[in-house]
Image (cartoon, rainbow, N blue to C red; front, top):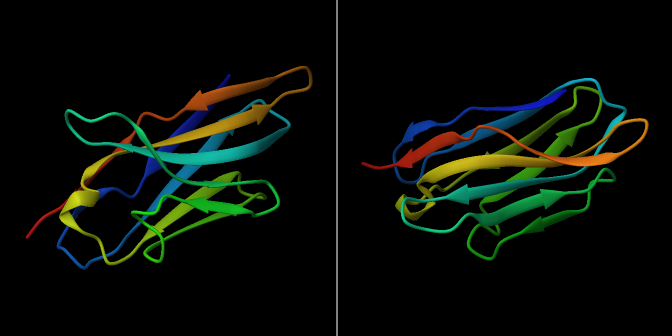
Length: 119
């Protein structure tokens, strides 16, 4: 079984920074694409950023220039550095990953971590 565990959320003032982590554990051979989504109350879950195993990245327009995604393949961990945070960044942030085993590729979700940007 594979688990994705997010951490690093919390309460921060506008203009502040947070770094989210997504750590994979369990029995697997590797991790392909990793994505960060977010969902605010009453809204759909939106893609924020993604990163390939080789380090190619994608950012939603709303976070370009403020968020940076990175990964440490040796630690099976992906990070989302969030700077210049705005109240509209408030949401539950979810990690999503395509995880390889010896015989299949399967998609997993983490449990989410709350980010609240407020004065």
